[in-house]
Length: 237
Image (cartoon, rainbow, N blue to C red):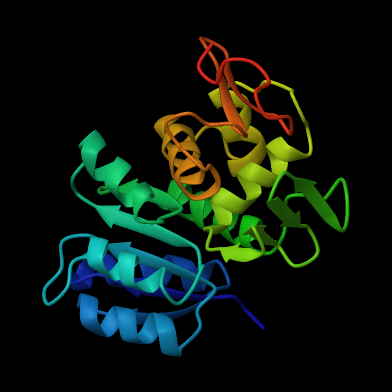
């Protein structure tokens, strides 16, 4: 069965361009032209990926993404004519996986779609199986779940993959560029700020006090690393 992509945009010409090229590339598409309808279809139609415009009637893309994350971890690519950094950061903080600025090339759009679908289907190899346990945080590599004190932590797909990648390489420091390449897997697209935003979200969910992290630490001027031992160095050294 072809993978199903939901396109949500109030501009008919954009929807036509996207659906034509997606179908040509072998995908099935469904369309919505406002935020409320898009959210309903995203929940009910169970697409494999959502392409979501930001500026739309009835409900903007930010709110659609926020509400969608209450129900689903489907990959979300935001579409917008606005290229400001704050818009990108807000998109990622709300749980979006990627961001495309209009006008875009068809080649880039398809590359991003393919990369996000590949990540969604488990393209990141698992070096270990079963569980990683550190303190009261546990990563279940079979169930793709993270718990703290026995309670399930709601993580986006990117957040889970990032903490898994770092936890499996205890005390090994990775630069933002390395993490973007290894976890996001398409280093030529996107913004390195994506890594910082995802780390910040992870710390807020995993750490007892995200202002003094004990799991995901920063090596100043180098990058990030994971440690299983509390008090292992200065978190912001």
